[in-house]
Image 1 (cartoon, rainbow over the protein chains, first blue to last red):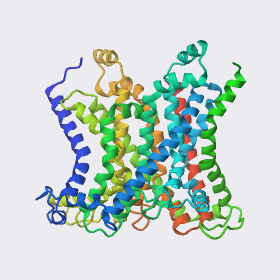
Image 2 (image 1 turned 120 degrees about the vertical axis):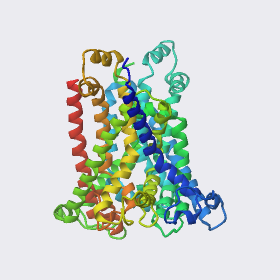
Image 3 (image 1 turned 135 degrees about the horizontal axis):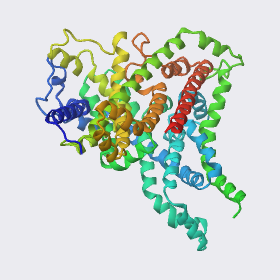
Image 4 (image 1 turned 120 degrees about the horizontal axis):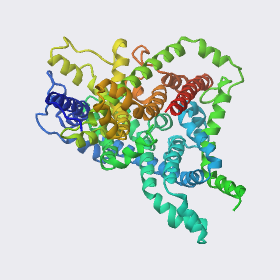
Length: 281
Length: 293
């Protein structure tokens, strides 16, 4: 093993400290802004540490009094949940059989590359016809319409992740069961899908995070509380005439909470997914 | 079972996916091509066939050329910085020190933060009147008076790049770290015995293991950066004075703000073509790298 000289060790610890500060400082500042009294945030020189902990903005955003900022925020939170949930479910439903078929049938593997290639498409290349199509079917400003559009991103992505998941389940298990006389649907139900459950869960989680994060289509295809998602609501706040920056920060903290918690808890699964080919777009 | 049945079965299982993909990707893409040869409006006018007029107008216009330059700057600088910072962070995280596990866990934080929240956060940091950056620099004596980082054409793009890097370099670091952990210990030990210095060790012992995963990260990050929209829209909307107007922002303005669906579509397809060329070039590079190792 390499022996570390004291100087090298000091350098490593100092660098680690620097990295920790770089990663943490912006997030910590977002949190501090969300709990600082408004006066602190507009003070000069700026008060870095809140003089008093002010949780009123969390109460404002999470109270469902009609026509309040809170009602709008909660509506957008629910819209995000609905859209991401529906899109993830639909993506997994179409991706599981396709991914299994591609994994077990090398002859059709090329079709997967065609599917993955669509990942390169900039959303702007599809946006105009999608807008016109949604308008035609009356699905503009609807959570269903937006969820449908999100399949453009989620369906190829989950198929890709699931295919590599199925690849790691030995096909010999399936062949053995087949020799024993099991039907294909039995094999899938009893053997393959339970074995693939962890991969399916990770893929679904990735898909959900991707949908939760999406902004471009949501900006284009939603216009009010009936369908506006959290990302659009936050962009509105950030670009609007809100004078209390703490309120914007609070909305950001609340929107970041689910993905950050998922990220920290599911760390191991996410990192192995991220590094083995699936990279969040 | 026969081969034909197996591949028929495969196609049947893929049918739902293929139907969905045709409906939400295939058809819109074809329709974008059709629209790009018309003068259709987003709402109201179906438009008439105008031939390649939209393409000529777009390619000769200064808006497109300027947006292409802006996008290229954004992509090249942010991706290069993310790669360098990511590899440095990974080399650090591969060393032994107290708190290493916690620091590795922290790296997931910027990645998990939604892009729009990240953009909002940095917009607040760069705020010209109350922002943390102005406050910190002034209190440290590095800045005489508050500046509008996102409001001046000279600093806006750089400010955006910093925000983008902060969010994305940890991902590169995690990918590089996974690759570093695959380097066999005895090889690094042997190179030490053979007297290789730190630079040679990185170049000849570690780099071969890093190259593949890093190249994949490079490809994906470049394509992402070339398509960039969210972070710019939230932080500057392409301003000030269009100094941060990237290609995706330009398409958005043309097709949706000005409702010119026809020329917006032609612009979108040019962007698509550029991204495709990038991807194909990278794919060739990847294949060459795979063949070399």
